Length: 194
Image (cartoon, rainbow, N blue to C red):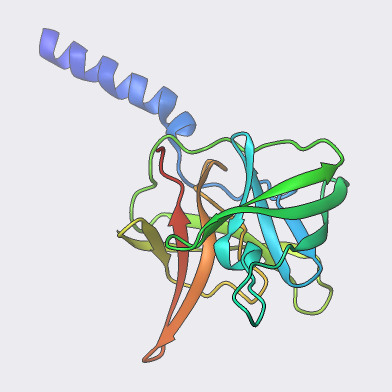
């Protein structure tokens, strides 16, 4: 009898808290993802207390191999805008930071855990016709060597976007796309605590 009562309590708690633990949502907020317009079209992700993007977005070199200082105009869907300046980068992980001037930012939360495989992940990219930022999703395929791989291609210009889990928390930055043997794969650098 006690065992049955204990099991009932466990199931009741699981039922009550399941919505809080859900990893699937159609209400992922991309309004704070920053569209960068300038020497390239890309995105940036205000997460934690930093603004992150793909390293290849912030790193350009001239013909002599010297780094070129890059600047963009930025805006988000929430009405904020300003100027973005290329900052530090990690070319081995294809991860970069930018300094932002202009309106005050609102930052996304960093995910506490990596989402499970086969869960839905989300990012922002440009609509090809209007250049408005739109949300896209895919299934998470696997993790390898500090990267997340998902089953759809981010479009050109999606580089630097936040990669969101189903709760709207950020766990990566969109960096590449791979097409090989008719397989389409998106790649994001994981934002692991250092």
